[in-house]
Image (tube, rainbow, N blue to C red; front, side, top):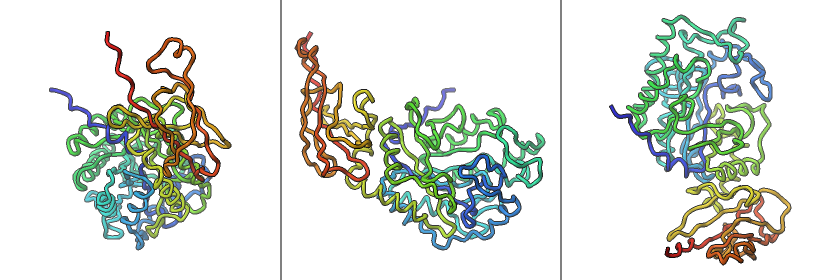
Length: 436
């Protein structure tokens, strides 16, 4: 029997920015999603007050986000430059944000609405690629076993996990696969299945190969992240950019402050400039940024998140072409900053130089095909910039048909963008090889 081919990742490589949505009933109390009931405050930055499991689980009945408007979410995210969404259909706390038939611990039982269906429909209508997040872990399910307030279960310690009997594990795993199957068969074609929670059991116990085959059978075109260990299509560094670009497709998932859910006491918000610079650095390394928002208990984006998304939207109006549909640009020895590139018709190339460091009056790009530089402009305005190019003497002496050297570009201070200036460099196609 032949092994099924992996789905194409070409479209994923060109997205640039995605929206991660961490939401659940904990938002009504300003609690971090799932983790605040673990008692493991050492896992939180900033530290968060512990919440009892009894109080956390009982809170589900209060979840009625009357201002929930997924079409408004989608519109703002689209203007901010996001082109895919990943929605938390079920986090570690086990609360299903969709209409599961296998548990009463779900939004369809507490509020009578299928939140996942409404999010998927709204974002799909706006043109987004659709991803659903699903945690293997279920701290509410009796057979997992359920997280409790006794001293054995808490505080949560990495590497010290609660275990049930083999019979309980078999029952829970059947339940987990059943819930995953519901998601795979109820919301149309999915582009991404974003799995999480692999850390509490071994690869053999989870059976990641079987999980990947289930996804392939139900959603053959969907990509799966690397937390389906050994069977992922892309990697997911978390909260920081990697030192070097991972092999293959990747995205960095990042919060705007420190917490994933809606936690009003967390005031560690990154500046709009810092968020944007993380995006351009990810794009310059050939990856995507999956930027998180934790909606409030009323169903709205926090004003701090709106402020940052609006800042991205303003910048994207002028500079989106340097992010969408691009690939990694120059090496850092060539240009000391993030850069991307795109291929143009006929073999031409456009480079995008993102100026993230100040002050600067002139920038230098090294290793450039100097005879092929056709123009240098400020992206967004189209203003031409003054530039000079100098070939390496070695290439001049060798009469190279395509010499390399240094490109020097003048940057007038009055033209600078408040968040990130982008310089576009247009290069003609490489000359045809001389006949043998």
